[in-house]
Length: 562
Image (tube, rainbow, N blue to C red; front, side):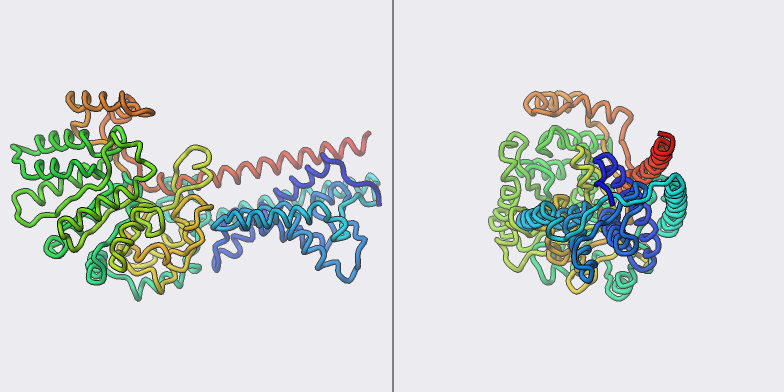
């Protein structure tokens, strides 16, 4: 036995083992796919850790260490080698530390600090504690060097090819033909049909018609909060309109509170609804003018679905005695200084209206966390005001990618890696609703909220929502921005005045974006774009593997001819 490895050799060995483990994880994921979906990051880290443990137990070294003729030097009790090794790798190896610190749905600060302290102590004193270290082995003949190189390169090549084949098959089997054909680079391995059997079985026995489910909730609760998808998603407002235009809603509930729209503009909308217009063009023009006055805390609310929804409600309510009582709940755009208390203000606007007008029941549309019944959110304040009388229902959507968010982009990805989407794709008439309590869906870890250090990430879906609505698969959804007359001269003047007051907003940005009319983004681009990043990572790892093989050849050549 000789000296320890140099820093560069250690780093190169680590990189070889990392890439090798990555390809192994793809093969493991593909092998398990029929029964179980292995999450990409945690699956890779667990495979990497297992790779170290197995290699050390069987061969006393990893592939990277083998190339540098290094391996384990054990000076401890031979009978306790395996327990010592497993504890060493499970507390001090790079994949183990990353997994222990960050491999949780909820990142608790206390847990993080405790684990960091323990792992740091083990890492600093690991040679003394575990009596195991990595050092060079004897054996440096030319034949041995050439043999090591040939084995490493062959193993790397076979593994990379096998991994690519397995990953490709896994991707083809677990994705829709639409995604494979139209967005090939977005397609990545997803949960298999067999792995979601319990979800499919539950749906077949327990799913309800969406409207029947909502009106059934109103028999138990006075107020139902719908958790909106991304504001600009179009199809959700088709469903919402179908609910509120139903006779059961008009006759028994009647009141619809929305996050969008300033409380001060409620009367202005009623005046708009009561006004006669000569034609549809006049309706559009007047509605666009109304929306530029006070519909958002932002410079402009350009979403097509909201314009269409207000327009449809105009035609539904106009000239009728029984109407859908549309009640905006947000603050005036001038009051942006109150953003920190926005949830409590919106809730107070809703609560005070319900009490002042003696309104018994209502549907409330809130986006994202505002619909949660946990502290600090609008839904929480409403549920405190009417204990036991408030339900909240999530409309199927994706979750925000944390990595992209940290990089300054807000992109969506399939919730729970697409597990629920796969289940709904297996039933007839997948547009349905159900209670999350006592369902396999409700038992899943809550990943709807993006920030893993928020306490809600420690909960399950059944703890966060009363019910769930599936309306349109992700690929059937789409977004729309823009509507007619938005930049009419009077509207633009009004927006320019507001632009001068609001910081960080540009009206010219919106004019450029909407110069050709409504802009649309399809669901495959909204929810599956994150797959492109995963595929780019895979291609990058293949390139790194090839570069590593070239570097190993160069190192071996230098060793032999120096």
